[in-house]
Image (tube, rainbow, N blue to C red):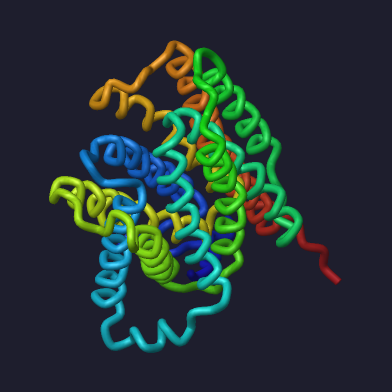
Length: 328
């Protein structure tokens, strides 16, 4: 990550895949990652015979492979230096990411999609509190307001006509927002590093967890269609979305970054309704619309703050240039 300063306003930037993300464009990259992630539940629901652990194995191993290829292509001769620069925070972030993958698949296999996604809306709160406590990162009023509005929308989404969730699935889903909050803070405070590094770690750890869970039981022998679904879920969806989220998290505060991922909650129920006939209630439509308003509000507020900061800097610079000078 580099820091560039001009006469108007300080700008933090990070480059990925030939694109430069700034504090202004970073929120849009995070939101786009959430849209990509929203297809994950649809692919899981589309499997034919694979258990949650078998699906998780192919999802994780394909993610590790895709991220490793990215590292090799991007760095080539400099790869040993990248590996030596991995810190404890990168390892912790990778393990947390693997645990989030596991919790997400376990919860989806036991709880309906909307309920799983409801609990994920708590992640901005944990990210905001941890960011404030650990790195003294201020949470803006607009971010708090958008989080409150998003929570209201999700309560409406799942508040009517939902069956009582499975206890194991509920616990697994409930741990995801806490881990995501810690993960976002770790990315925010880690030294500049290739965003694929924690992803390789997560893919390896996640596939090891799934492999251990299947040993002596079902094994990893599943129909090729399920293998393809698992690999697309990991190697394509996560392989594309996670590097952008990791990179953007270096220039976007932890709380807004996790809040912008909630676009997944708006879209995922619609995908499973369209192709898997999973129930889509009026509450889902109304609540999803409210969450979308919250996301648009946050993006607009972020842009407005950047514009105000730039305008103020220009005015101060102009005043300093034109103020009358007093002769000694």
